[in-house]
Length: 153
Image 1 (cartoon, rainbow, N blue to C red):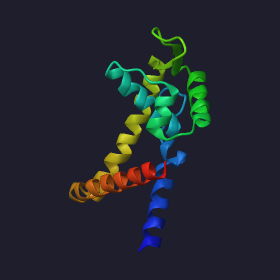
Image 2: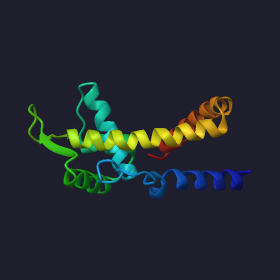
Image 3: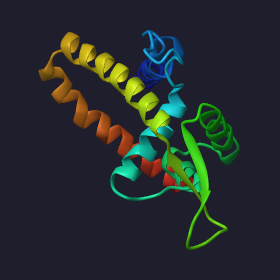
Image 4: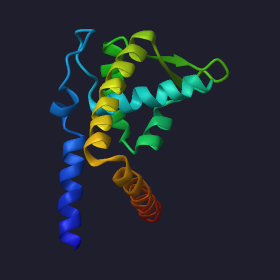
């Protein structure tokens, strides 16, 4: 059973993080969809800004478990696209805060709509009843992996 679960898990994560699936739509902006990690970062920044919060690169690393060097590369790419800016905090000039710019919000919303369509198709093809059974199981699996991650730290 462990090998079958591992096989399905690897296949699922590979498909979910597959850039071809994420890029399977035509972008109205002409800039293409955001890569997976950039979309995740923009989503976190959008949610933070929606609540009046600000995040730093360290905050993003903690939320995503992405290494600092990888996060810096993601942020540089988003800055190059005009999606994100870094600013010194007003209260502590040593603290660098991140802000999602209007272009970044537009790119994120476009990518998010595409992902919502993919999820909608999954729900349609599996059926709501099966998805309702799957959701608590996936949450429980994520909780178990989170606990294992904390134990390893």
